[in-house]
Length: 236
Figure 1 (cartoon, rainbow, N blue to C red):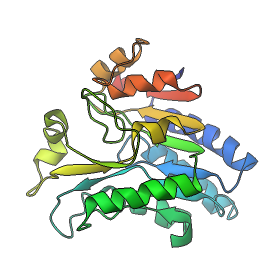
Figure 2 (cartoon, rainbow, N blue to C red):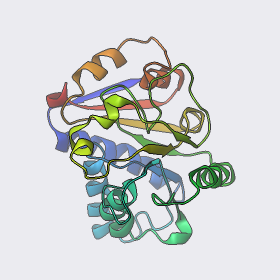
Figure 3 (cartoon, one colour):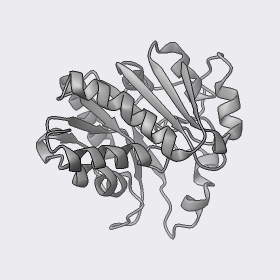
């Protein structure tokens, strides 16, 4: 892993943008895995600013969504879809033909996950995979456990995830997740892991140790040859 330490969120995000832009300049139609949440939001804002300056930027980009909550009330805006649409897909002008996603309100989660797995196999491997880290070390919604699933799958959410402040405040919190598997993630050519926000100090300190365990899913990234960890020092 390559650790990049930054004094604030803005400089961390800028470094992430520089790494992403370098790859897009070399391969304009690369497959970009987009994650929801606050940690990578600064990267997306940088990409949108670049798009405003140079309309050609990102015009061939192919995008696939990392994960999604399940079991939310119909119309809920606490979805990964709403988050990435607002911060990235719409402002970047990504057309439906260049975006593969999973419906948070699907009536058949297993079939929806199987379809996403087929999309990854057809369009992949992923060129750049964007990740955050959970307080329990989860990556995407691959939670701590005895085993790790390689493929896109329906997953049970850990209590530590469900006890997150924002989730706890929902009238109808998610009851399961739908997520890219660890195998999908590790097949990516480049991984950018953003560490920002509150409650990440313990997970970050554990990540620093090159010890791999499915009980701490982020540690599996030690098995990948090209991971950049972008750290907002205020979070750790």
